[in-house]
Image 1 (cartoon, rainbow, N blue to C red):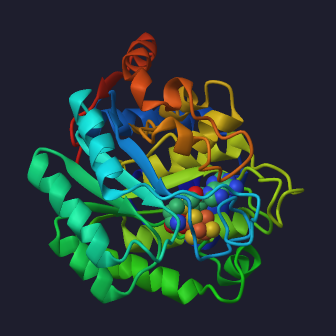
Image 2 (cartoon, rainbow, N blue to C red; image 1 turned 180 degrees about the vertical axis):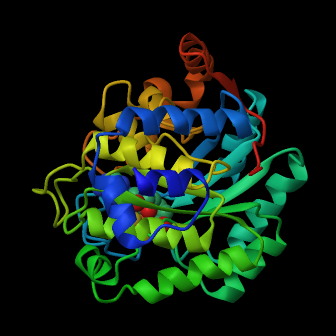
Length: 341
Ligand code: SAM
Ligand code: SF4
């Protein structure tokens, strides 16, 4: 397959070539095996764990797919205090985590200044640890403030690189251009930047996924978060079909071949949608997992989609169990910072 040969020799692919690689699954198992080989060459058979802290479920946005959208009156809202965030980090650090991902809705309370104070305290108390933020779109100046405070990484999925598809997923108050501007700024400021997309959102197609791959090729992020879309009953997409886990796994392998150096999580959505989904993610080239450290009362309320898994391998407190399970499949779980190589 010509497009596959081009991908393997690090040549740029055009949109049609991406569509053929995504749609034609006759080479799927070969692609999967090569993806694992490429990952092993760069990182070894190592899975990096990041401690996830979902610190606010309050959001000013209204993304049609997300259970935290502001119009969802049934969502239970909470906001962890700085002390609660810091004591969660302290617990995570005590059980070995050296990367903390602070994620939340776009909560106006958490200004860049307030977040910076929290980041500074974490970096001061735990200089051996990396801090990742994932709190949506902010101004260039705000991102600069967060970077100056010592934030190492920032996750901001682009959601879709197709402008029209973006408008199907979001109300008109949200702008595709602003999302892309934000990602470019994050990269320019020196964050290890994460982009990404859901698989199988309403209006998605092989064409939109090909656009995603072209966008990722040009942005060159350090991380790409990919998981299936899972409907949430209290959103406008509540009755829509869940995204395919097979296609999600295939996209993970293609992303690994596109950039063997990527930090590629096996996401909670994949682990929720598919039995043993997290292990299947690693067997398709992923190399990151984000166990949840959020205090249990709040963890239950951070419901992006129906059935979101918050126990088992997704739970930070079960890290030793996860370690044992991954070992059975030949993977070593690392809690080190695991920076982009
Ligand atoms: N508010 C920030 C943002 O939007 O970038 C960070 C938190 S947001 C909940 C994190 C990610 O969850 C989004 O980028 C989106 O891709 C994913 N997500 C939201 N709703 C989802 C759903 N129904 N199914 C799967 N993933 C979903
Ligand atoms: Fe808010 Fe993020 Fe959910 Fe959109 S995806 S509603 S920005 S939490």
